[in-house]
Image (cartoon, rainbow, N blue to C red; front, side):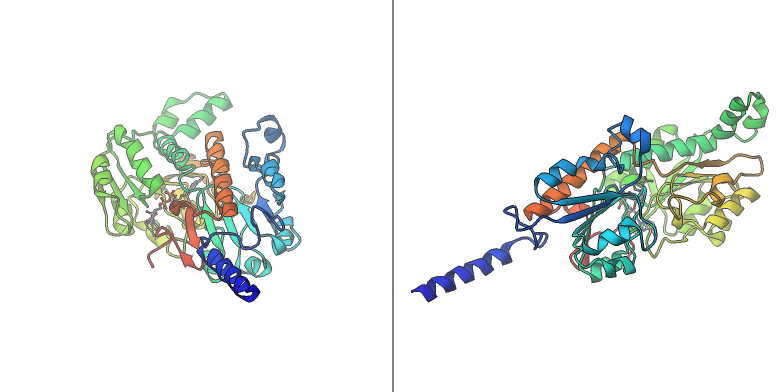
Length: 393
Ligand code: NAD
């Protein structure tokens, strides 16, 4: 009898474990034999973060997760120290179960970092864009990559529209003139135009690209166009009146204003290089809030200097923080303007921080409870791609 009972208990235990969703942690249950080690790499907020608690994405404010995580017995390590083998990131990743990173101050998860990270099961991106994680290696290592999809797409789309306007209207040199104490209207008006009547195109028409099209429509552009291997849903394309173009070369040759809104992956790294820039309309404006490495930094600086581009604006850089001598910091067009670069902050407004902090908590909560994640938040599932946005496969 005892043997039969034992066998039944054994079979039922196997059934229970098999029926658990794949996302469940194998080393933690709410009854909890041991808590998990969660490492977060965030940017330093300094005095601003002490004065403004809504700066949740900072080392100081820790995404608002510490007391919640610790009350459940987890260990929570937060740092901005991310470069080099002796950094907190590289040391603590060795036995971390979960890594939280943000695109604003990316902890680069290279294949070497994955090799060190023996316990790693989940990478959570607090924000949108997980290209700082080597996604192919994540698949090989069966580490899930989850992000708070949609959390800051409106914030970025607004920034894109602002960038288009400030370039086309030649805002930055006009403002700098006022700060200098000068007043010379024709000096700035000689390179100022209206957005109305221009052909505006987006490379990538996902959540951000589509929102940009929606937001520029009331400016009465001559035409809205897009290039994306995933077409916009018919209704959405009709509502904004956007024409799909088959190749990126064709798109840039037709646009006065080009905006980049696709992820960084093998197919987009260096996409906007010297060859493609030659195909742009002379004097076009380019806005890139997607990822810096989608553009060749030297080719862009040269195109601006020669006037082939009239302006370049965005907030993303090929390495972050950008080095002091990065060509995009000081590049100018022949009339001394055309540079709208800022640090990476378009997707980290206080409104966005509230959303991506809450989204990170919700992802962790689901993981701890073994619940299925929101499908849109899964970039890489266990051993497989879950998104179609990181290139055609
Ligand atoms: P999304 O997944 O909704 O849309 C991305 C679109 O790009 C998809 O439709 C995909 O098919 C398309 N795409 C992929 N490769 C392409 C290619 N080679 N050519 C044309 N289109 C291509 O993503 P999203 O929410 O719109 O975000 C897009 C990107 O914006 C993110 O991956 C991230 O890199 C960047 N981003 C930046 C900030 C910021 O603060 N600057 C914030 C959020 C997102």
